[in-house]
Image (tube, one colour):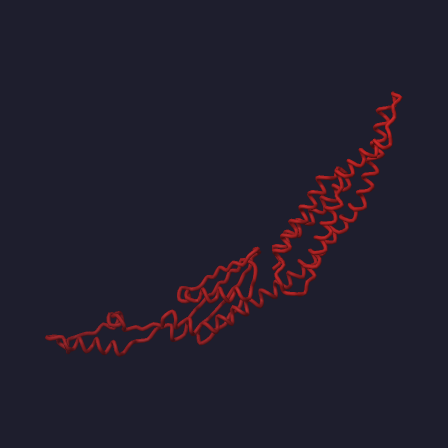
Amino acid sequence: MATAEVGGVHFSVELRSLNNKYFKAIIRLPEELQLFEAELESQLTRRLTRGSVVLNLRYSDSSAAAAGRVNTAAVERYLQQLLAVPGLSHAAARIDLGSLLALPGVIVTDTGEDRIERARPVVIKLVDEACDRLIAMRVREGAVVFHELHRHGATIGVRLAEIATRVPQVVEQYQERLRVRINALLADSAAAVRDEDLLREVAVYAERSDVAEEVSRLSGHLEQFAEIIDATDDEPAGRTLDFLAQEMLREANTIASKSSDGEISRRIVEIKGAIDRIKEQAANVE
């Protein structure tokens, strides 16, 4: 909110912003300043890059200019024409001021362009002040979002490292379970499973459940995620983070579909939860 009073004219600018992937301006102006809309939208576009921004401008003119002015030349002309009417008794004539002032051209008011010219420097200054305060508020909120993004990224990194460690153990456990199961099935017969057959089955399982490529890609996405949120430039990052979160979620889903291990599944659930939080927070990042 930014306010000012200049020459008896009170101005009030209120600026609100809601999350949005893109920039959208909604400008609400008093009737007499409607011609100002395009200029104010252009000013907001230069200052803000994302969000649904609502600008409310209130305008109250209590100055002498609000009353308009009497066009004395027009009044004199009307009187001259009345006095020139043949047969009119000038001594008995009565002039009704209300009717006289209602005649066309007697009361002159400023045009919308005149008001805008007087209001322009004040309104532009107030909109800039409101933008400064909105940006300062976004910076404060951004510090909180920055901390949350780092926390979710750290969660993904820890769980991903645990999955990478767990994968070889899962293959070993599968090999042992398979050996025990086959030996149990062949216990009543003289047959025995050959090691090469067992290893071939284990190799098939290992290839089918191999998530090394997905883990590597997800790790790469996580590195890029850290680079984006730690960047010191002023480039907008919200859309990039949203897209990156979608790519991270795709890799997490692939890992989940390939692995039948309960421990890995639990860690993937945590990873997907952290990615969802990132997607939510990305909507708050410019």
